[in-house]
Length: 387
Image (cartoon, rainbow, N blue to C red; front, top):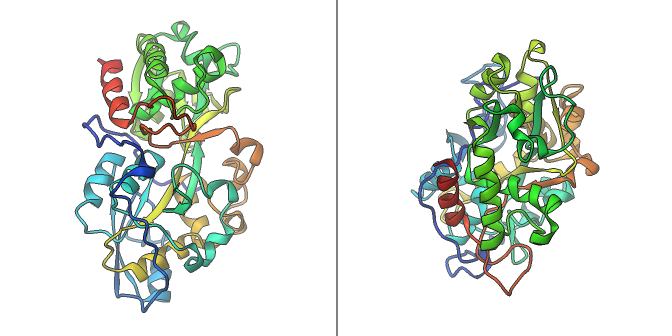
């Protein structure tokens, strides 16, 4: 498999963020869909994770942008970003027609009115996208679709098979039993990691009544914070840079913690590691391409959204990056073991993933008798956890 040297760095900064009072009720939310397409403009400006729009300049053998430009006449300008917070800041400049955003950013973009709902009838390849990635909390609000999926993945548990014994089957090894590996536990460095603790509590502390790890009231958030503060005593390092995570597992400085499949695939055999989906399931991501409300090139933006979900382009983009494709037909164009390695289309695997979704005050689990904690509260809590 081809591993990009610029696979996404999904660190979410500790900047004070927009406090959402519930995306569905935001007066800024754009609800006007494009009804028809016109002539393609000559250019389109894209914003995305590194490796999401390769034109051969990084590697002459890796180019799915040029065929798009040739077919549509839309010349692509692409800017990569390193964090979801950076992405939102850049997108608000109005310089970009479309953005590839993760679920910890999409609802913020929708609530602020920076993206427009999509007319998926104008995106023919959307029909081929896995149904389980459509109409989800992170890309759909009040029945309006704001993003078309690019790819998806799970945050797995990885461990050193020589050191971590018996072989773990639960996230317990990084939470309640983490002291056994004190100083050599790793965790993902982001406020959204609070959801990992919430998922663990959802399975092991039913009295908290957590039904969605992204919908936490104050009591539930406090319980997650307590668990993460206890974990903090055993964490050797938090990671957001995948290269540092690879190095740490390779040297043995880290022996157990959160990982991505692409990190596991990048490790040498001498690292003696194994990555699993624990019994509780896992958090994960599904990235979405979204069109700016005031896009200067909306026709080319729609053309790009349609193109990136075409089987051949989707195969190239997701395999280069290291995530499962958004469409089943992409597997016809990927390398032999790619889709199997990333569990593409595996419903038994997929149903155990809780995809990143921006926490908002209007509880995503449907509760109306309480207010849930939003992303600003999670950011403050993460600062408190790390000290």
